[in-house]
Image (cartoon, rainbow, N blue to C red):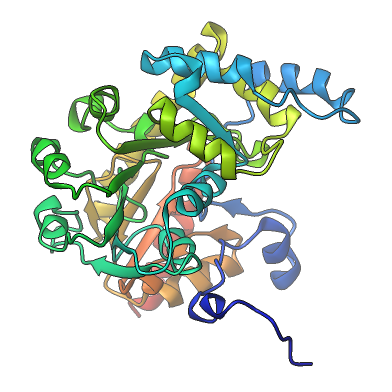
Length: 370
């Protein structure tokens, strides 16, 4: 059946393809267990402090959540040194990104996106009628803000930056950030997606809040999905000047965060929650460095990552390697979709999961080398 009436911009968009689920892999390959290291989830979560708080909210699922999300906005604002009216929420960072696009973009606008980065930036821009201009990463798999600066025009409405970047884990040179912000056209907004920032060395990241507080057209987007282990809770947020937040709230759907996820997020921002997150966050960072070392010993080239994953190249086709790993119950992400046909991205799991990945990956390399 031909479906009619679809808006014309949709024909230029591509459906987002998520990583394979554990259930699909078990069904496809007849497995009883799977190590899922393909979607950058936190395998230590959900944390006890969040589980306890969320359990209480299950009893209230017949009631809408408090519409202004005052508790969570207050504690998030405190984290960044601002009041709660500088914060707004969405059901995951993806929803927040989408609502930002809906707030700002219209036909004739241009957006700049990193060519090898989170694909959602392209699609949410296209559906709003904007022209997407891609800026390639350099040979070291990092973004150069000077390359973005060269593409700025009076039509540029949004510059989307993922920092640390997905899938490479690289960070932008913070020393070039000030110059880039000052070069933005009058109506242009810089959107910094810091979904993985809690895994990075803070000394290597620009102080995004400094620019927001100074009145620059900069938006900071974060999530509870990665470091906080609440991917299924679907809580993302932005921090921006209150005037923008008001417009964002105007175009956003009502009740765009669920009460179970909200309760978990508030609990994770407590002193106890922060301590639990740091305990396991430190373990993941240590295991990231361990994976770097072990993969290097196996002849792979690992690239500096400040996220909860490792991006590396192999001597063989990444798609073939990923398929061979699937057959033994290990899910990783081949990076051919970004144009990196011999590169893989492996999420940092528990220490035991990481060891299983290394054992199976070593066997795959031995098979391919024969």
